Image (cartoon, rainbow, N blue to C red; front, side, top):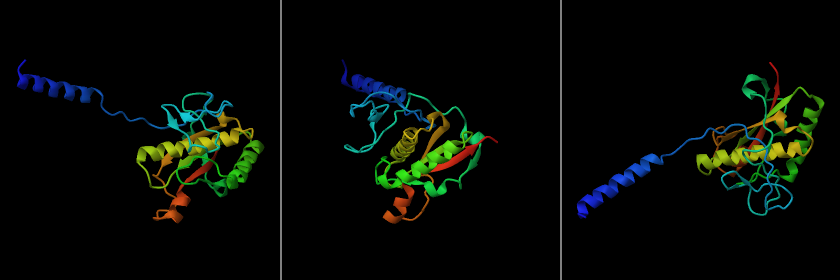
Length: 197
């Protein structure tokens, strides 16, 4: 075989291969609770589908898997959104973590009590990150944070079908500043109380 013909054929095959395996984008929306067992040994999953680990090794979290279990049966954008009602209960996270901190457990308790007292109410949990990390990673981390809070509510008796999650990653900072003081305010999960219109 002639070397120039072989190299031309190789280049054409590589170009076709790259074109056929192009990038896909995926819209991140509400994510259902998971139910598969994981390394914790008690039925808790330890990763999102696709092998994305939840939290850091050794963290005590009750994570949620994309693709299984009940999901919210409502569209938060078609409901009346009250952002002020639960604003004081925003949950904050450590750097690169999706574990609900012990100091924020009382906030989750308070939100669970509000939902228990108003059975017509539903909830949207919005996960946020600071600006460090790639956009894709921060979207994933924001979703894990929202799901961790959703699971914490489920452990307190809130029906997961009443709770939707959404990740904004780093797109909506609470503090546009630079440095740890601003970043710590941006690593959060916010609650939006929902009612039928």
